[in-house]
Length: 295
Ligand SMILES: [Zn+2]
Image (cartoon, rainbow, N blue to C red; front, side, top):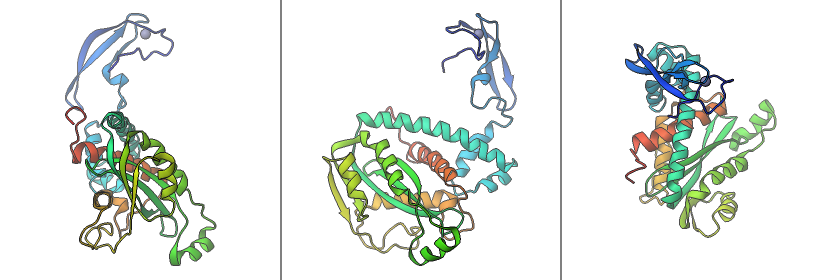
């Protein structure tokens, strides 16, 4: 961590020297103190941290674990004996950290390119099934890494379409925006001659042609799903999109608001995106234990 003077009026580059330390009881750590030789400001490593003035630093790790282990935000608050609004605030910090780590992963993948890409959309909803959302997901088949996930609003379909329009009015589709964002964020890490696989969705060829023109694009017919796989794993024997569907099933089984037939649901699409961002890093780094240095 680069130490810079927290005083806004202090002209950089300032000379920072060590100036003693103190013991922080909250997480049993020795904290280095510093002094700026330019303005005389004294501060510590804690001043510069994103957890400055937090009272229960140890909870952050636990919140991350629980968020990615099928626990709702309200239940996390109960388990850790904190306020539910604290959980929401901590999610912002966790997301920032997760996005930073994901950025590192993407930088790493620019050298070790993805040779086998699979992508698809999974359906969930905000508040009610009459307000569906779509999560566009891209997965590296060989290493199982999640490359990106984008949430976008879609209109209700099937027998709920008419009912939804009557109750909530016209609902615009932002699926194309979501897909554009997803492909914008991943096309640099995909190898020129990569094999790209997806299902028969009518929007997909347009994006593959635009962002991955030289890739070998293959499309597959979807099959009936089995109950145990959270509606994502297929009943048929061999599934060419197994890694993708398995990742979708992992999402459904790890993120409480994505579980099927449940009380818990997303109230705000931005929070779902935040939750997904935290989970992607958790899954890649902790669950798959992918290491940037050795791989
Ligand atoms: Zn200073």
